Image (cartoon, rainbow, N blue to C red; front, side):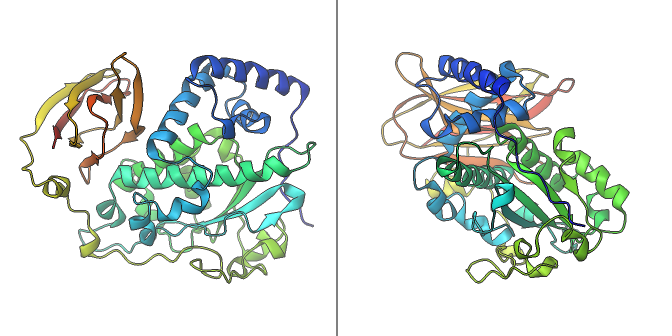
Length: 405
C-alpha cells in the first residue's frame, strides 16, 4: 500500500487574519515595505506556520532576510536563470552535488516538485579530511546555500502565482542520498564540516520556513539510530518530523510514485538534460590540492601589503563595530579569524545616518580558513563593519584587518 506525503493545506480563516497582521507589521518596519515578490498570502503564511504564529519573532527575522537577500545580489526577475552563473557561485559548483532539476519534476497531487542532493563524500586521507572545508570559506558555502534556497523559493513563487486559488503553498520533496557517507566521519559535533552543515541548516530553517514537504534519506547506513541523532544536530523538531528513512529502494516507492523517483533510487525517471546526471544531480569532482583556497589573495589583487592584524576580545552578547571611510574609487577589504563563530555584516551609511546593508548578515566560522572579502565599486562614504558574538557564555577572540585601497 502506498501512503504519499500530503500537500500543504490551503490558508484557513484564522491564518488569513494572522497574514493581515503580519503584513501590517512588516510594512511598518521595512523601508519601502515588503518586497513585491514576497508580499503574497501564501508566502507570508509559510512564515506564520514555520514560526508557529510568532509574529514578533518573524518581525525580527524577516527584515534581516530581506536586507541580506538584496545585499547578496539574490534579487531580480531573472535571478533563477542567472543564479548558476553568478561570480560568487559559479567557481564552487564543481565541488557540490545538488539538484539541477529546477521544478521540472512536478507532482500535481502534492503541489510539490523534486529536489535531490548527495551528501559530502570526499574520501578521508591521512591528515586531510573532507577537503571541501579547505576549498571553500564558510561564507562561500553559506552564500551558495543562501542563493540556492532563494532560487527554490522563486520557483515556488512562480508556480503559486498561476495556481488555482483554492490550493495551499507550493513545496518541494527532498531525496538526500547517503550512499557514500561514512557515519564515523560525522560523529564529532564540533568538527568544522559538521558546524558548516549546522550553519547551513540554521540559515534555511530561519529564512526559508515551510518550503519542504518531506525529506527522504535514501541509501541510509545500517546504524539508523545514529542517523537520527545526526538529523537532530541539523534540524529543529518541526523539520525532524518531515524525515522518512526507507530501508530499501522499493520502500521509497511506497511513499512516492515511480515516475517521480530517479531510476538510481528505484524509480523510473531518467534525466537527460545537462549538467545533471541521470538523477538530475550536478556532477561533483574530487577536490585536489590545487583547489585549496589561497588566503589573502585579495590584497595582491589590489597590489597592497596585508596590514598587521588588530586584536579584539568580544564578550558574549556584545557587538564590535568598526567604522571605515571609503573614498571615491576605493574598495573595502577585510579578513579575520576568530576562535568562535561570529555574526558578520557590513553597512553603508549616507549623510543622514541611514544604513544600507551591503554584505549579507551571516554567522561565520573561521577555524579552517580565514574569512575575507572585498567590496568593489563602492559608493564613497562611511561603512560600518559589525562583528556580533551571539553566544550566551563565551568571549570570542578576534584577529582582523580592515583596509581601503
